[in-house]
Length: 183
Image (cartoon, rainbow, N blue to C red; front, side):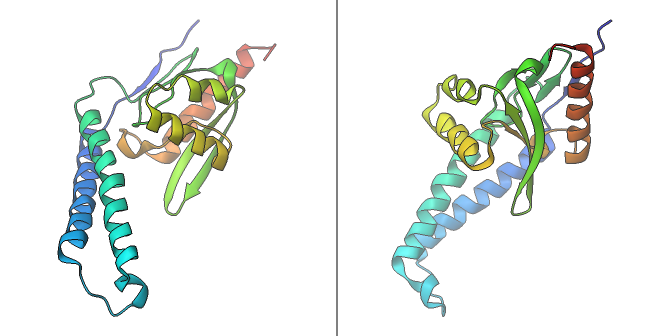
C-alpha cells in the first residue's frame, strides 16, 4: 500500500523576506559604487576592494533577487517526497525529480550559519548535465566539487524548518530501503 506523499509548499513569507534582503544588498552595492564611502581601514578604502565588493554584491544579490521574484510567483510545491523519490523545486538551483534508487546518502553541511541538506546520488553528473541554464549548471558543479553532491536542499524558502525537513527525508529514504531488498 502506498502512503500519501509529503508536499511542502514554498513559503511566500520567507521568500518575501529573502527578496527584501537581496534588494537591500543590491542597494548597498550600488551605494558603494556611487558614493565611494571612505573608511579608516586601509583594505576597505582600497578602490579595487571597494568596487569589487560593490560589483560582486550587485551581481550576486541581483541574481538572487530574480530567483526570489520567480519563486514568489511559482505555484508548484517546493518539495514533494513520496515512495518514488524527491521532486525538488525548493530553490533557484532545484534538481527536479530524484528517484530513491539514485540516493546513496543524505547528509548535512553548513556554510557560515547556513545549513544545507545534501542528497548524495549515484550519478551526480547526470543531474548537472540536465540543467539547461549555464549558471545553474555551474552552481551544481561547484556544489559537487565542494560538498560531494550537486544536490543541496535548504528550507529557507519552504514552509518547514531544517530539522523537520531532514527528518522527513531520512524517514522516507529509510522506508524506501526497507521496501527495496535489492537496493
